Image: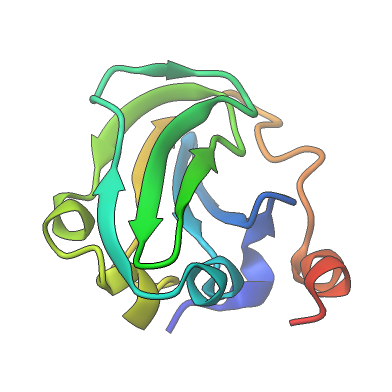
Length: 125
C-alpha cells in the first residue's frame, strides 16, 4: 500500500509521487468519491509537454465530467492504459494501480504542492 504521507497533493485533488526525475500523477480518493462511478478517462499522448495547471485530460462519471489538471510541469513519458481500459480502477484503487500519467520533471517540481496534512486540512477528508 502506498504511504499517503510521502505523496504531494494539489488543490485540484491530484496526487504526485516523485521518484528521481519522474512524477507519477493520479487523483485522490476524495476526488474519486466526489465524482462517483467513473466510466471514462481521457489522457494525453506520450510526449505531451505540460505546464503546471494545464488540463491534461478528463474523467467522466455517471454524475459529471471533471477536468484533470497537471500538478507538475514536464513531459508525459507514460500513460496508464489500464485506467483507460477500466476507468473504475480510479474508484477502487486511486493510490495504487490507478495512477494516470508519468511526467519527466525538473528539480523542484513539487514545490508549492501540499503535504498530506495540508490536503486533509482543505478537504476535511
